[in-house]
Amino acid sequence: MSLPAATGAAFRQVFGEPPAGVWAAPGRINLIGEHTDYNDGFALPMALPQTTVVAVRPRTDGLLRLHSTRGDGRVTVLDTEALAPGAADGWARYPAGVLWALREAGHPVGGLDLHVDSTVPAGAGLSSSAALECAVALACDDLHTLGLPRTELAGLAQRAENAFAGVPCGIMDQIASLCCTEGAALHLDSRSLALRQVPFDLAAEGLGLLVIDTRVSHDLGDGAYAALRAGCERAAGLLGLPALRDLPPGDLPPALGALPPELVPLVRHVVTENARVGEAVALLSAGRAADLGPVLTAGHASLRDDYRVSCPETDLAVSAALAAGALGARMTGGGFGGSVIALTPAEAAGTVTRAVTGAFARAGHRPPAVLRATAAPGAHRAAPAG
Ligand code: GLA
Image 1 (tube, rainbow, N blue to C red):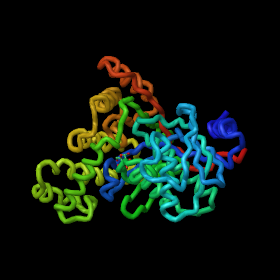
Image 2 (image 1 turned 180 degrees about the horizontal axis):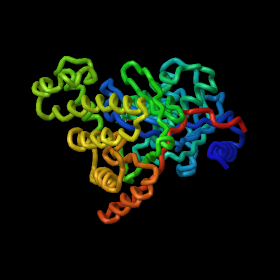
Image 3 (image 1 turned 135 degrees about the vertical axis):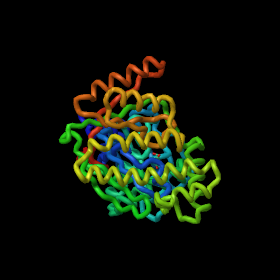
Image 4 (image 1 turned 180 degrees about the vertical axis):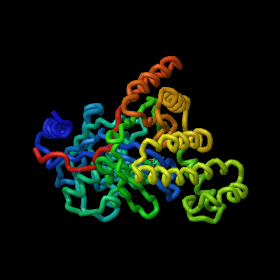
């Protein structure tokens, strides 16, 4: 049975009635453009085939009842009228936060029953929380015929994560989950929210893309991400700029000379990373995906040496993948653990997987989980009611 069909069937078992519909939203990887979104910069994510699926039925009494296949079996019951930051915990913060954000923005969204299942690994830096938020946001938009643009739904999902769940993330993950399309990477301008689909058909170019989940669980709510974000904002303020996006690469040397030493590597990463997004888009647009490799690897070096968000496991996955024939490799997402992506010739994917797995075993790390990524569709209504 497909995941949407199974999720619909499980809803019926838990709540005793069929759902009004089933919605799916994917996890993502980011090809390049890391820690740029909250600097008003650029990113190039793509959706994964792994999705979070919600089966939903509106209620008329204002109650929000939440159940997950992966939870402890209990149904969490909340009152939509009493929703406020802190009113929910664990995974329930994400769906509850989306309802709260929609209602705060004045949209007439009432209670609902919701059952969720997911194939997006949690804590792997692949945006499992954004996938859940976006599936719920799209379900509410459809069920209440709100007709909100997807970029606006992404903004509301981000608000749920920032203000309700307390994670100060940028907007990339929610945009990726809602706006990516099959066979393309998404060029995101985080300031204007202008989006461009950049064709990314790896198989046609004889390439493969591996996602190596280091299984070092990443947590962006623990303060380190917020500190980096604050450092960037402070640097922009000292330079008299609205955001670091406004610093052109040519102005980097004098700008770095004017900053306190602790902010120098942060600014260098953000400015060079924005430039790498431009390079990557130009290569893909010219049908030269294989030449993306060095851009990815340079991005990793910058995250490791300047932004300092890699860890021994992500660094080892990158070096082992490169030594085994990957064309380029880098950590993806916020860092502090999570996943690495490796671009390989299609025929080298197995060799690279075995090399990374072997290197982890020799280093005494837990075995990584390796997925093969293709550019999958963004969030969508997944199955008819019933
Ligand atoms: C996390 C955040 C995103 C983005 C990335 C780093 O995934 O949720 O908004 O900042 O880290 O690029």
